[in-house]
Image 1 (cartoon, one colour):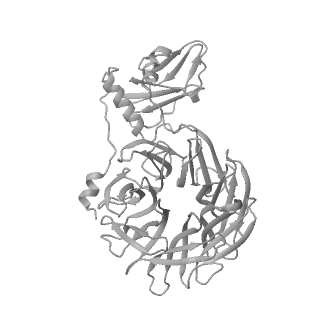
Image 2: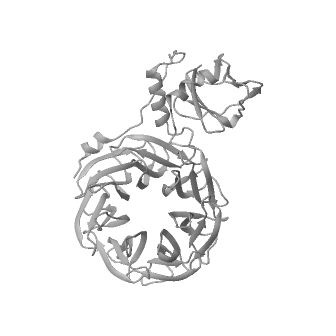
Image 3: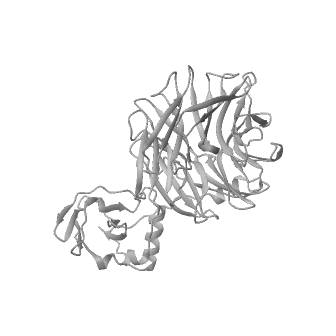
Length: 502
């Protein structure tokens, strides 16, 4: 069990950097190290070039909660839609190809509310989407399973549940079967337990299990371990030090409990995603709120195979930050997708963090516009890019639309020292106090989109530009005194970085 001291000791907080006006910075190794570190940690800085960003939906609100890659190199998104519904919200499923072009869409629903939260591909290109329905089943809500062929035609549907309110949040594929994770809530006692259902590919139930204590437990995510058993993560108030604790259950292949663990602060904490790193190490992510702080932080926690906490680190600032998905990257680090209010351009932005196995923040990028943009899930694609799925109010047609963002393969910014230092060789710059003048070689073609300007806090600076033959002029007379950084991106993707002091 980890204590508050453990939490606080391992908490990462943003370093506030201040620069004295008019201070002259010599271009030495220390400055280079500082600038590179700053560029890596600056949350609102120059999001990685995007391969595509797509929205899906109509004039009403449409949300994406899950995505999976499929065998024909495309992706399938699941969520709910009020734009294309027969009743209230309907489950909404969209298939796109590798470049985000819509191949088909379908909605599944009846007189009540339906949604789809997760999806997996089965044998013979069959898709299984899991969510919730209030139109069919035994209780006020039941877990909904929808089987579709590769063309989006519904093959059949099944419901799972008791005379309770039952909600499905996740589905994963084992070697032979499918495991559904969710929550079942008794309408009389209002007590809830984790609901874990093992079904075969036809939807027949192998076993049904509940896990919990005297109070309330909810399961959000699950994992088939390398050992062949299962781990479930969620939240619990049974043994909580606060409103809710992070809750982890490990069960055998028959669903029998092996162990359970609670971790948390004096406030409400939750885990929503887990990944196995090697035989004995696991990582999970979610949201945690420290005592006295108004909003949640995104956290990553490392545990061993028997549930002992090895460390927990949080990543965020003073506003809301949450981790929704964690995976292992191709280079052996961790990728965390989530939502941030602390960083980015709008009310909420999608965020991706790259973290070392020891918890060091290696890179951080945000994606979004002026509204709210949330990454609910995602993964690294076969080409090395990042796929993020969620919803947006910044783009699209309705109040909210499904949102799919794919980055270019080398999503991590490259800060090679020779590129940084060779700026003075290829691009000669002069700062007059009123203008930044960038001179460049003949044959180089630069436009405004090739240049990014930021201040020391990482805030992107809007600017005008006068282009002449062989040089550019950027007026800076309205900028506050201090140090600024700029980035020149050539058409071949090569980046050069520079700085000036006003």
